[in-house]
Image (cartoon, rainbow, N blue to C red; front, side):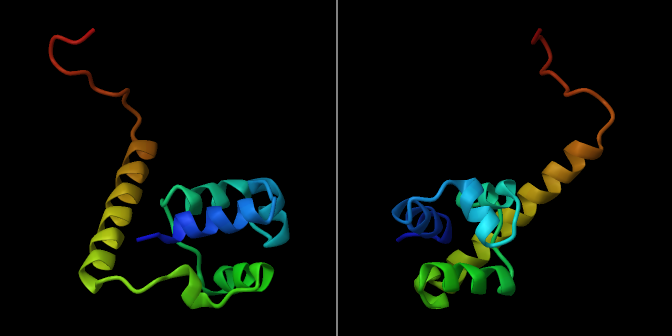
Length: 102
């Protein structure tokens, strides 16, 4: 089953837009588009509405029905990744190496 990231990327490519061009048309940064297309984030309501207007699709097009359990697990993974990234960014110590690694 296709996920939001795959659907957005497909629409962008079919519309012959680069990530930068799409970002300009929906008033976002290119990195925000990259996050969506890599499955690291989901857009808010206003951004989703801009995508729908630009591509001429309904909101439901981006979110085919999925079992609720799968959606919950995906959201948990996203939160864990965001937390890990935040901790890593705040860390002032260098990455730890495994014992014996050089």
